[in-house]
Image 1 (cartoon, rainbow, N blue to C red):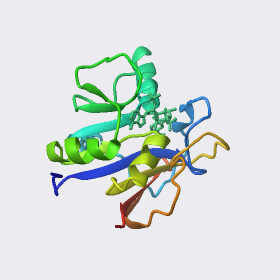
Image 2 (cartoon, rainbow, N blue to C red):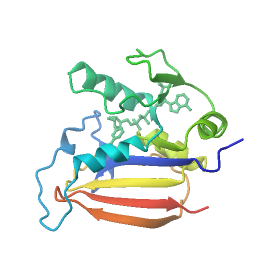
Image 3 (spheres, rainbow, N blue to C red):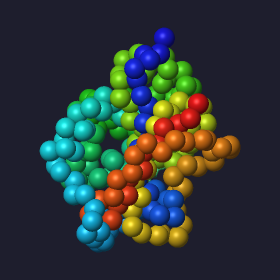
Length: 188
Ligand SMILES: NC(=O)c1ccc[n+]([C@@H]2O[C@H](COP(=O)([O-])OP(=O)(O)OC[C@H]3O[C@@H](n4cnc5c(N)ncnc54)[C@H](OP(=O)(O)O)[C@@H]3O)[C@@H](O)[C@H]2O)c1
């Protein structure tokens, strides 16, 4: 039975032209040099408190492989000590005790396993997993951070949605870095 309090949020950062990574998976462009004088600054204490409200992360294997690459370069692990579920049909290295692999029916996994156990469930990419989550009607919320850059080509935010998804805009925030954060609720 699904926990009625639970919320599934899809969160990703993308270029203005809607890409989450270059074709080769590169995310070097996430570091931009813009400055929007009227924008808010990100308060590290707020970010820390906010991250504490997330109960678990879900990601596709390709996103996990990017995270593995970052960890191998000594750039750390972005998901703290929160349970992190990686969707994959392959055997991948398990670099932390908090990492768990899953293969199969995503709706059954989210509704049967995650919703009863966690309140705030964050899908952190990539495009294929985000689209799958929306196609199956599993997402409650989409958080889209638009960076001040166009990259021309790459991996799209939502890959093969196969239909319209109506949204309700809940919040807009503009940051000093030139990033705009849009938060939408998925309309049922
Ligand atoms: N800009 C951002 O905020 C952001 C965020 C996240 C990721 N990214 C980037 O996006 C790229 C990855 O995105 P992507 O769309 O190519 O891939 P992805 O969504 O990360 O991973 C897709 C893969 O996950 C596995 N998978 C998905 N659903 C599954 C299921 N139900 N059961 C079993 N396995 C399942 C499949 O791989 P296998 O079964 O073959 O393993 C599938 O090919 C990376 O370059 C990453 O760096 C950017």
